[in-house]
Length: 145
Image (cartoon, rainbow, N blue to C red; front, side, top):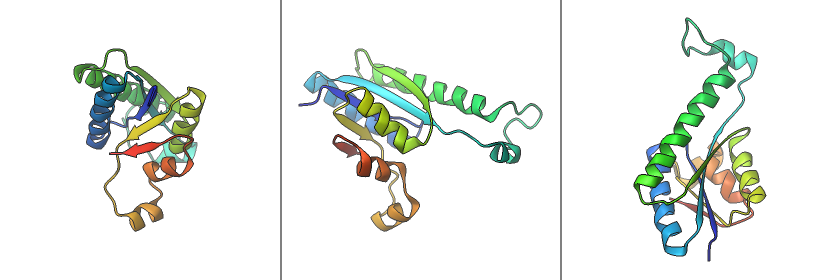
């Protein structure tokens, strides 16, 4: 059935619900479980408008990478607490949806399970949510929880 399940995590409640479902499915079918957190590059212009740590802002990419690592590690601990035996967590930089799909293709993922944002189909299409983009471009089945 499925040998390798990928779960994109962003720290949201919906992502954690999808992670719990992925853990359950991975235990049933004996699939490997990988988690990915993707952060996007901030341009110098975007960073100049940032209010993060006003006294010592530091490079925005470093701040985002550190936060992404924290999200990935918390998700990995959550997966272990839910019963996963050996989940692997990865942090990538780039366009979120494209990075998720590319990672899945490169690592032989045969199912992507991810949280949805809970918006209607018209609104989702107009906003271009990550889950919508992943379902439209993935090489494998995508289950949106």
